[in-house]
Length: 203
Image (cartoon, rainbow, N blue to C red; front, side, top):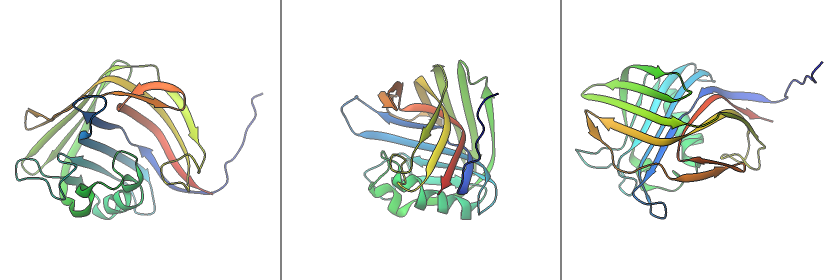
């Protein structure tokens, strides 16, 4: 019989957090940052949130390319941005998070089998967004200790799969950048990835 263990600590949130961190070149800056959350358990209830940074160097972006967080639970979304997204390496310290606009998300749905391709389709007022992960690699389970997790204070459990390509469109317009190689816990993936079965546990 396999060993069994109950992990101690408080589960701050659990759900999914696929992302796309896109560059024009592997050694260049990020030009598009997207982090999607589907949270099933948290102190602020359930909900969805898409953090969409179309201009990482600008606090608010432009009228054509605003920096936004779309959600159906704004309290949850603001907590995720402040306590988690702001600690993610690609987002840490960027001006765009300081004046992020919050808008209501109407609906979202997913497509694909998460083996070859996967997509999240998000609708908000005046916005039709499609995030597509193509050429998915073999999924793997990961456990990061608090000292190695993004927040520095949570045990993080997740199932990751890297994608060869991450494509983001807003009202049919493709956002700039492409996925570039990334190492995670000794695995070679890219900066377009799926993250399922994710839990952040505070010891």
